[in-house]
Length: 475
Ligand code: ADP
Image 1 (tube, rainbow, N blue to C red):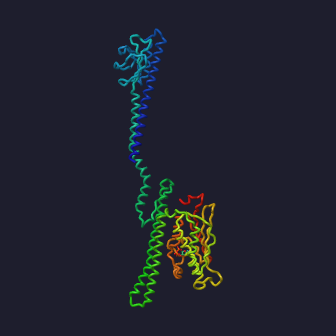
Image 2: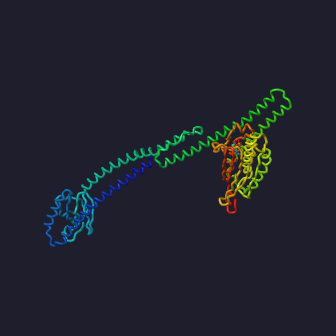
């Protein structure tokens, strides 16, 4: 603000001084012009009228001098030594400053502007003719211009910092507001947002951008907070179960069978804990190493075929048929270990939920639900060579997922029906699908779900293909 005001003042003063000097120079220039014209007129008179009657000329010049009394106009005939031989009425006595010459010269002396020249035809004794005029009227004009300049300069000197202060205040007020609001924000208090004034200017756009960032940050912090709270909650359940089993074991004498049973419970809960901790670690890994996940060309058909083989036994044990429909050869950029993890999670879910539907209807480990239908899971790979993507479909005819839960199932720790799932010992952690999503996103792919209650669920994973003309997919 200070520099701005200084720049305005310096520029303003420079303009004023230039204008003032320009006007002064112009007035003097005009006066010189008039005096030179008068000199020319006298010169013409002298040249045209040979044998001139000097008396008559003096009378005329005197008359003119009286007529221009306001400007104190006068004429002098001067000898070579610089003394005035004849002077018109009202002519002042001037110091000897005039030097003879054929060219018209001008000078200012004792408050008078003079134009003089040696004229042919002038009296031999006084060949130099000097026409003069007072510069008082120019000085008067300049004095009133100076008064105006001083007034305007004063206005600029006082007004510029003042206006600068007011304008800068107006311009920086929203910024100060923004700084105050951002300074108040804390990770635990992220509700406040920057004020958008509705002017649509750059500051408004900045406020909207920062607000967008704050929204994302708040959402991220909330997710982290929920994640931690859920993780702690999930860890507490098996830990309390272990504690109560151990307490029961220590509370009195037990038979060997009872001890065995209690220790088996402890081992069960330890496995749950292990699964949960492994899943949490996997999530942290995929979140942190997004860039490092993808890299090698992976023959997806082999990974899918291998996973299907591995789960065949579990599926049969649960009375579910696992069918591999179509596995054309496809290569995707990725990480074999993580892709296997995705397939395991999806197949594990498909088997346990599909089995849960049919087991409930027809008793444990049944092949059908009593109406001839049986649990079935289909796996297929559908390459789209034009779009350079491959779709991996895992379809089941399990219980399906209610419409309102579909958008939430990829959220961390989200389970559709906790009570029911836990009740039939298929209870997972609710982390499986969020792990799948994190891994697939790290592979620059997408994972979608389509489901209808009592009809089944289909997960569709789309991954970029590595083809001869698309090796870039590996980068
Ligand atoms: P969980 O560890 O509970 O399996 P997931 O994240 O893998 O957690 O799945 C989240 C929820 O999505 C499950 O609790 C379940 O309700 C639902 N779900 C996932 N896969 C299926 C499926 N194939 N059929 C029906 N419901 C499913």
